[in-house]
Amino acid sequence: MRASILHILRQNGDGYLSGEAISEKLSISRTAVWKHIRALKTAGYQIEAHPRLGYSLKQTPDKLLAAEVQSRLNTKLLGKKIHYFPSVDSTNNEAKKLAAAGCEDGTAIFAEEQTGGRGRISRGWFSPKSKGIYLSVVLRPPLSPYEISKCTLMAAVAVHEAILRVTGVSTGIKWPNDILYHGKKLVGILTELNAEIDAVNYIVIGIGINVNLYEDEFPEELKSIAGSLKMAAGHSVSRLDVACRVLEELETVYQAVLKSGFSEVLSEWRKRSVTIGSEVRVQGPVSSFIGKAIDIAEDGALLVETEGKIKRVVAGDVSIRPLPNKDS
Ligand code: BTN
Image: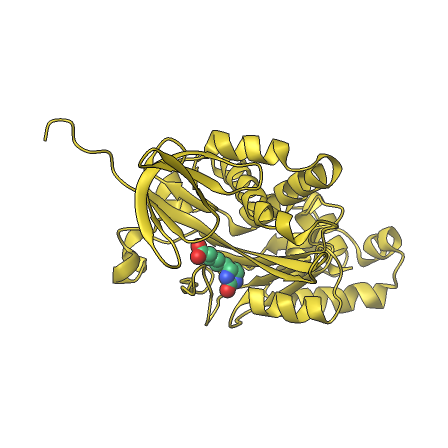
């Protein structure tokens, strides 16, 4: 209901709308309208109340509040249910708890900050307050567990598209799902799976986006490898715009996958890949090697040519090696 009130007030621009008009539009009592407005003010909205004219939305807090995201969202499944945390250890952890308790398909979890943000290969994810987007989405896809690694590629394609549409910044995807700009990582995606041998119970797609950070706001060890949308675009970027667009793009690509499989995702991924065609170092669980990434297979594995053979990489860390200087 709060999302609907915000939507109506925003549509009304700078004007005022009476409590009566809102109550009629939403078929709720005027007392209920008043209570929702009071709750929105407590959450940080600046809503002016004029005794004769009614309510006018003056300022929206820079927060990824559930009602705010929902009031802007144009989706049928993703984000229909949203949980918001001012602070949490990890949105993926919350998502897994909610999924285990039976939450709806498409439930989204946002946090303003994470105190234990998790990355791939047991790494952490730097998650300072209100500077980034820390989002997890619970999906219950009718797919085999073997197909799930491709959902990670699907998420990367969706986030790439969302960033392009909102900021105009054209990023590249490093296998499997890091999003880079000029070699610096802007986005990380951590997909977690809960499944039986032959059926998926749920997956959690965790997406971390560095939005409004400058280089000097990153910890020393990340300064040379991490970037942000603000650094790439040259100006601050609305986290709300990016967050909503990510959910919308993810829904579009997910529906396409459910309808016709992953082939379109794989071809979109290839177009945006900065890995294919590059010299790479593959750091696997037991060994590491250097080779040239030539493609991704239909199951999402990276194909790397090394010593005349083609190796399939399904897990591990892949770093892109700078091309040797021809003059040296
Ligand atoms: C990586 O590149 O290693 C993946 C990073 C994924 C970070 C996101 S932030 C939201 C969600 N919650 C987490 O704890 N991790 C993911």
